[in-house]
Length: 288
Image (cartoon, rainbow, N blue to C red; front, side, top):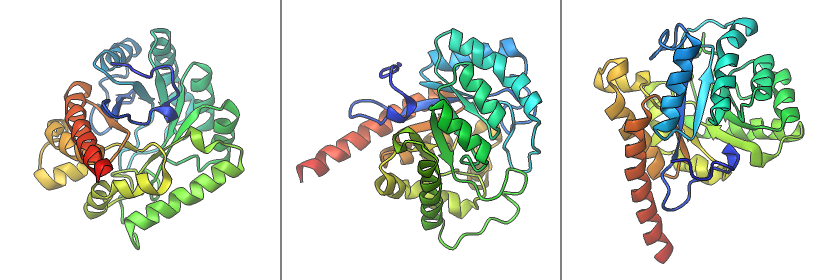
């Protein structure tokens, strides 16, 4: 289940014969859109994280602040209270852990506790966060978001969402590299549902190979249970695993390296099929 586990997350580029890797979502929050309130107790959160790990997640993404549309910011002290004991316990059990945060202090203490990846929905926009990422030397996932979680879905607008996201990553990478970060430490996430209309989300998922080819970096895709799915099928938040599998598989079939999901068991199977189909397509292209 955990091949290549000795490597850093940024080195988890999907190889032929291996399924796309899975990031398991662990929200230690009272108000996340899907599982808010379920894992606010440390012991419950740790047990769920271990279950995600044993189900095949390559890394557990621990977050203490909801970034659902309209969510209010959480103070760093409260965020640390929620996540730090969970990070420490999971690392002690041998799990790979990422810290899902926008705040420099949380990043720093989580990395000191053993987190090996900073997953920041604001793409290290804050200079203090960028400084922490550079000086700790851990890998980072830079995500595109228009606005903030509180404002992002009020009226998202793009000239061309695909090229605008490309420009955003160009600027982010330049800023990070100028600060001393190695490009080899970076994973990119197009930020499905973060300041995007339904049409924007569909365009990004259907054309995510453009980002893969443009940057040549690992791509993480997070579509799990998101509201654009409900807009299409009217399924409830916790009834969207089938749709999640379809959207995630479309990404994997285009070369996405990893997917961020709530239900690791169901999505691992979908990734296995989509990855095998992608390999079959590549084999034919390589022969032509």
